[in-house]
Amino acid sequence: MSERATILIVSSCWWAFPARLAMAFAELGYRVDAICPAHHPLLKTGSVHAVHRYGILRPLRALTGAIASSNPVLIVPCDDRAVMHLHWLHTALRSSAGPIPHLIERSLGSKDSFGIADRRSDLIRIARDEGIRCPQMLPVAKPEQLRSALEQVGLPAVMKVDGSWGGLGVSVVHSSAEAERVLAASSRRTDALQALKRWIVDRDPFSLLPFVTRARPVVNVQAFVAGRPANSAVACWNGEVLAAITAEVVQARDERGASTVVRIVDNREMAEASARLVRRLGLSGFCGFDFVLDDRAGAAHLVEMNARSTPISHLALGGDRNLVASMAARLGGQPVPAPARAIHDDLVAFFPQAWLLEPGSELLHLGHHDVPWAEAGLIRELIQAPWPERGRLARFLARLRLRAGRRSASADAAFHAASLAARPAGGRDGMAAHSVVGTGACTLERAGCRKHYANRGGARPI
Image (cartoon, rainbow, N blue to C red; front, side):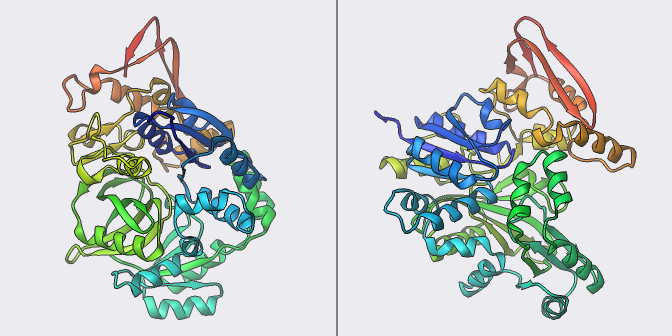
């Protein structure tokens, strides 16, 4: 493109995939700007042109400044909090004559869908109206409402908090007493001690906002479906699907956590359900849908929607499964460009998540290990502990968990690095042939354990 158009990536969480989205758009010739908190992986990729600091107590002001400065053709939120802030900004500015409300609608879809995207139970109700198979979900605020809901959905049941993501705020309950305990804990307003803990220990300054606003979380009860998780990612425009990926989860961080390894599949039922909701809600941009494939017949049950990009959105698959290329074609009015390096494997292991969870897993070698080899600085960043886990208090608590026998995906980074270094040559994605270039040391920290890999004078294979 003669004059590069700008994509604005919005991320309030320290996740890896926003940096991969930035790389994907940059490879297609777009200028990519970002708004994110300090120490974000987006700061470690050369694909980002300008970075704007995501304000803590005034996120709408920060977003307004970033949008005005970047003048993007598309805003791409990468977590639910970023979506929520964009919805708030649209509400605050919708009576103005400025371009920002229109740009938010262009990027996310019809404004009528905003409230539905923020409320899980409303989304499920609309999906059921569309004839989509999904387990019943009911909002509950009081114990008597909870007991009534459990009579309808049965036990076990799944309890979910609106505004939560990444598996947080989700509990499977097996009795009424357990459900009441979860309701009491989940519906409680954030107090000062919780906010300070999340700010100081978890290094998440955005945790102050729920304490300041004194908002009470909305809790939902959903019927439990026994089966295996799956998801779809969609690029869409004004209610029309441009491209879609459907995948089954092969490995996840935990029972209800984010996926680390997926298998790309052609699941027509998931694709059709996603298309129906995209059309009904008039969605634009990127979004994702979570399903459970039941144990009886493998039927797809929709369980929730993510009104944002998801970790599989950047994957450069062939045909009508390349979301970024399809969106770029729609924005530029051009045919969908063929990816320079298409992914042909069905099995995809996310980096660094799969590696951190189980560094010795054969899954890392059986398919495509999605390492960003073109970005040495990004690799160095990702093989460290996520920024919120690098603080002294967080490492101290991680040590205590290890001593108590409770291990996490971020427990053994030194061994993870050694595992990747030891991969033999000739792998399907040529990992052993790649190297991280530069001098200095790459420090890996997990649970207070450090190991330095010196890189003296040139390239060092990972």
